[in-house]
Amino acid sequence: CRNRRFIRRQHGQEIYLEKLITMIDEGGIDTLTVMIMEVPCCSGLLHLCQKARQKAKRNIPLKMVKISLQGEILEEIWL
Image (tube, rainbow, N blue to C red; front, side, top):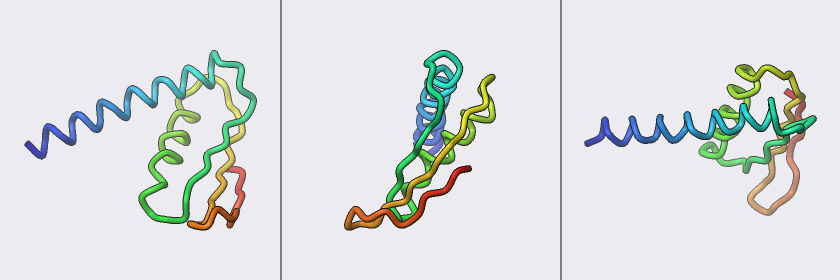
């Protein structure tokens, strides 16, 4: 049962990865900004976007914005 959940999660991530790659290659976007909260569980989307950027044909800038639980910007980094 645990293995099935892992496989479903992996499959779900692959779907989003392909969508992000398509957005980068065909969507006409010039930059990608990912906003995450300061809690550890929020970094998954950033990692997915980094992976998509690596696999995409186009190379676009990626920016990470980290916000506090109160909504204040803590950090902005171009990756």
